[in-house]
Length: 107
Image (cartoon, rainbow, N blue to C red):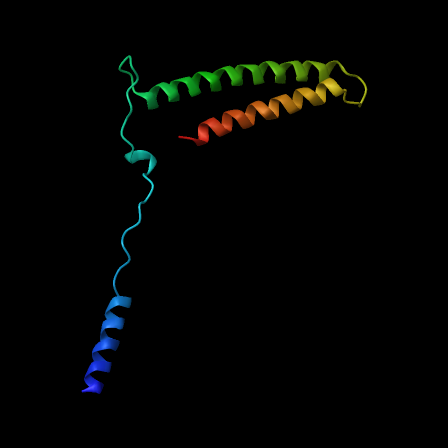
C-alpha cells in the first residue's frame, strides 16, 4: 500500500513539473500595433514618417552646404594646415549624417 502511495505521489510531482508555464505577455511587434488616427483623420504613423522625411531632407541640405563650404576652404588654403573652423565643419557634417541615419533606421 505504501509503495502504491509513493508511486502516485511521485507521478503527481512528475506531472506537475511537466506542465507548461502560463504564457507571459509578449510585447507587440511594430507591425501589429493598431494605427492611431490624429484628430484631423490622418494616420499618426504616416504623419511621423512624413515629418522625419522632411527633417532628413533639411539635414541633408545643410550637410551639403557645410561640405561645399569645407571644400572651398580646403581649396583656398595653400598651407597644409587645417583650421579649427574646418574641423568644426567636419564634426557638424558627421552629426548631421548620424542624425539622418538614426531616422532612417527606424523604418
